[in-house]
Structure formats: C-alpha cells, structure tokens
Amino acid sequence: STYSQKEQEQYPHRRLKNYGGLGGKYDTRQYPAKSLCSHCGLCDTRFIHYVKDSCAFLNQHISELEYTVHGKSRDLEVENELYFGVHLNMIAARRKQPLPGAQWSGIVTSIATRLLETGKVQGIVCVRNDEQDRFQPKPVLATTPEEIYASRVNKPTLSPNLSVLDTVEASGFTRIGVIGVGCQVEALRSVQSKLGLEKLYVLGTPCVDNVTRKGLDKFLRTTSTSPDTVVHYEFMQDFRVHFKHDDKVVGGPGKQWTETVPFFGLKTNELKDIFAPSCLSCFDYVNSLADLVVGYMGAPFGWQWIVVRNEIGMEMLDLVSSQIETMPLSSSGNRLQAVQNSIPAYDKGMTLPMWIAQLLGVVIDKLGPKGLEYARFSIDSHFTRNYLYMKRNFPNILQRHVPEYARRIIEQYKLPKE
Ligand code: FAD
Ligand code: SF4
Image 1 (tube, protein in one colour):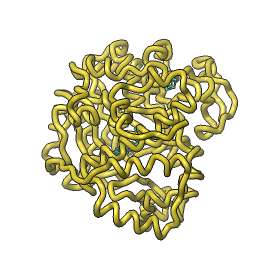
Image 2 (cartoon, protein in one colour):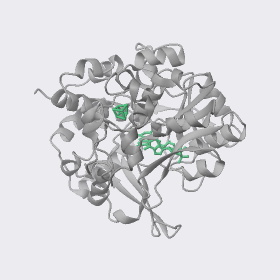
Image 3 (tube, helix red, strand yellow):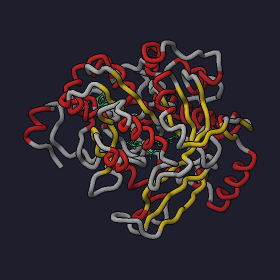
C-alpha cells in the first residue's frame, strides 16, 4: 500500500515505494535511524523534530533518562538493578479471573481499564489489530474500556504506538496512559516534557525478538504445524514456544488448542534473518523507563512478573490489587553455562533433530534456571547475541549504543573471536 495525499504532505520523508518489510507499508530506509528503525511511531508525528535526541537507536540515553524519570540511575553494583533496572519492588502476580484472549492473565488490560474508569486518565495509547489481519498493529488512543479490551494480546510485530502522539496533542487531554515497549518508551520519555501533560502513566512490557509482519509469516510457517490458526504465541519459561491456536481465526472462538515447540528445535539457520535489526540491537529488554513493567519471565510458569519502578507504578498496581493474587519471586539454578553454550550454537545456526530437542527441553526444564535466574538467562543470551550483531554490522556506533549495564552483563561470557 502507499500513502494518502494527506499523509504524503504530512510526512514527506517517507518514500512512497513498497519496501515489503512491514506489510509493504513503510520504507525503513527513509526513517532517520534507517535500517535500525523500530517504527516506534515518533517519526510519524510532528515530534520527528526531536528525533536526533529522542530516538532509542540514534541516541541511546537510558541512564540519563532513568535519572529524570525515577530520580536515580540503576546501581550497577546491585545485581537485581544491574539486570532489571531501577525498582521499588518486584513480585509474581496473576489475575484471579484471567481475561479471555489476553496474552497472559490480562493484568495490563485491567490496569489500563482502571486508569480510565477511575478518571486518572482521559485516554490510553495502546495497540489494536487491523480488522483484516490479526497480527497487523493499529495503534489507537483508547477512550473507552471496550477499546482497551479490544487491544489486549501481543501483536508480535513492530508497532508504531507513538504514531498517535499527534492525536493525543489534538485531543487536548492532559492526563494519559501509554502502553509500550522499551524503544517506544525511550522516545516517549525524551519528548514527554513537550506534550503539555499534567500526568503521564507509562505501563510497559518487556520486549525481545520482535519481527516485521513478513518475518512473522516466515517464523510461523517454519515453526508451527498450523501457521494459519495461530492467534498468539510466547517463548515460555519451560524453554518451549507455546502457540495458541483458534480454528476460527477471525470471528472466533472456534476450537482452541495449544502447540509447544522446544527452543532447541527451532530452525535457527532459517530464522536468523526474521528478527528486525532494531531488536537485534536492543539492550532494553526490561523496559527500563516505564513506571510499571508487566512481563512473565522472572515469575514461575503461569504467573506474571511485575516490576514496580517508582511511585506512579505503585499507584497503577494498587488499582488492581483486589483483582489479582500475588506471591514473592524466587530464583534457582545457574544460567552461566547454558548461556555460554548457546552463544556458538546460535552463531553457527545449529538445529537439533526434534527428538533430541524434545529430550533436552525436558531435562533443562527440570534442572535449568528458574524464576529470576531464568530472566537473567534470557537477558544474557539476548545481550550477547545482540552485542555480536552490532559489532559485526554497526561497529561505528557500538561504543555509544551499548549501555554500561549491558557491557557488564556481556563481560561474563567468552565471545567468539572474529
Ligand atoms: P494484555 O492484557 O493481553 O495486554 C497486552 C498489551 O500489550 C495491550 O495493551 C497492547 O496494547 C500492548 N501491545 C501488544 N503488542 C504490542 C507491541 N508490539 N508493541 C507495544 N505494545 C503492544 N515478557 C517477558 O517477560 N519476556 C519476554 O521475552 C517478552 N517478550 C515480549 C515480546 C513482545 C513483542 C511483546 C509485545 C511483549 C513481550 N513480553 C515479554 C510481554 C508479555 O508477553 C506480555 O505482553 C505481558 O506479560 C502482559 O501480559 P497481559 O496478559 O497482562 O497483557
Ligand atoms: Fe523515528 Fe522511532 Fe524509527 Fe527512531 S525508531 S527513526 S524515533 S520511528
């Protein structure tokens, strides 16, 4: 698809040519961060004027923003801060009554809904899916609980959430909530003071290995036995990808079922090129600049992992205290050897026969890292992989782009000699 006349006038930096990367809609090369652009949406608004200082890929400045947002930068000598960023508290939680169709139990959707219902905000920036395509993201400024509910579940593709900032400005709203992933939140925090807001609530999720719409198709076709019925998927703490299927993909629910594929059985050699360059260059897996982060990877299987970064985050979590059950987090096992082994395996694109992968999955699920140690396993594997990717593909920006906390994490491992 190409752009309307109005869009062309508004955003002349976009070249009107199908690139194919994001369902053919964007030409990545025309965005200021070029191939590193994650399509956070900032450059689809008038706030593109601030891109040089705000873009997570042109000016990584997490530590400085941590100070502005949370009143302190993370303490690199404290392991939990080194890994998970500034926080007041971390817990495991889940909704007593899970929301049907949510990614996990729907804590994000519940908090956003309560923010609106209690009048704390006038609108929530979130992302729905396109009517024709369940995985194509469609960012909105939601002003009703129904619109927030309709935005539940991950769109596992790059999503221009900040593209609605012009709408936010035009609405005249002064209290808003934004749901977003790390690169979107870094750009948002950089222009926050220009938005004329009295209050901003930032509800984040961790994010990793995101793909373009085209890359997603390749991933589903390479990995699932029934790519056309997948409604969502997640790389879970039991070292398996869980695909949720609905036989009536659109207009469901139809027959629903789950398929699991062990991480070690993924066809790494075929999948190497599906991840967006932005995600292969990201060191903000845990969304350091959100007020509250809701993920899963530090919690036991079936629970969500909550990181309360500051008072605003606490205020948001309190809104759903009667809807959720909680428990303390735990940590066991040792990730170091597993991460070290994964580095050359990924690098060489090794793929195991499925029966060995299944067996290895069972063993590592029993004996491998759990709880916060699993979260560290996932962070370490991605940071080492991403560091190698940057070193090989963007050596000239490596120095300024990799934050000090990520360097310290990467230094624990032996990387292949180039
Ligand atoms: P829901 O109530 O279902 O709400 C999901 C919210 O996410 C919606 O409000 C929607 O607006 C927003 N959203 C959906 N897709 C996007 C997108 N592409 N960009 C921005 N916002 C979006 N957690 C981990 O602990 N470890 C991981 O490795 C991890 N990887 C992730 C990768 C991606 C691409 C995404 C989008 C999320 C990832 N998460 C990860 C977060 C996790 O999958 C859940 O989103 C989170 O736990 C919230 O679950 P929920 O049931 O409360 O969300
Ligand atoms: Fe603009 Fe966002 Fe792309 Fe950076 S990542 S170039 S801020 S759209």
